[in-house]
Image (cartoon, rainbow, N blue to C red):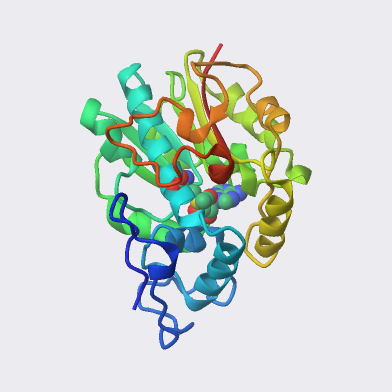
Length: 295
Ligand SMILES: C[S@@+](CC[C@H](N)C(=O)[O-])C[C@H]1O[C@@H](n2cnc3c(N)ncnc32)[C@H](O)[C@@H]1O
């Protein structure tokens, strides 16, 4: 049995999560053959944090270790999803009708095209992920939709993402586009120069394009951040909690819309729609968000 989806506002806690050891690392029918089911992946651990069912025992075990260090992680993951939704609504309202979702993850409720199309039914989205399960599920669920494309690529190689035929078919990069990097830049290690990666996407997009990010921070609880990073060394992508100045440096060339780079739950919150189980304690969310306009 999989963990039940964590629902906002119903008081479900981490301790109510269910784990069934009988569901082990056997390859389910939906798992692409190239997937190493023994190697925990960032995408499938995130799926577990969000209460999804596209993960294996290896993912669940490492995710549980992470939760031992950071019990708030399921709530943080949901909060990141609500920031994504707020940012997409903001961008669609600002006139953006095409989105490049980098590190898009395993599909879950409130996908980018669904949220954007509530405002502009013509909105187009290219979903990009390097995880084979994320790619396979995104393709299976969304690929038949007009104006939606799925790309199996590593975002650290902007050329291959941007010249991928699916990207080119889905998006017109001569017009403004929103580049979304939600909960993914912390999976780009320092040696791959995340600021440089962001700059490459900025350079490839038209003036008037936007960038939206969230990023885990070590600013509030550095010791906890180091322990959390240590857990992820066993996963497909290491995680790097970073300080505000390092994250700000990734936003060079963008004019940040109000309120700038801020604690993610303070980025244009919608108190009616976005529950806050951690009582506004930004130290427990430990993540920043920003949206910027390319000049
Ligand atoms: C924490 S999940 C976030 C998913 C989604 N952006 C969201 O906010 O719900 C991070 C995702 O980024 C993907 N990812 C990490 N590094 C990547 C890379 N270098 N290229 C493409 N995808 C990557 C992972 O596979 C995973 O699906």
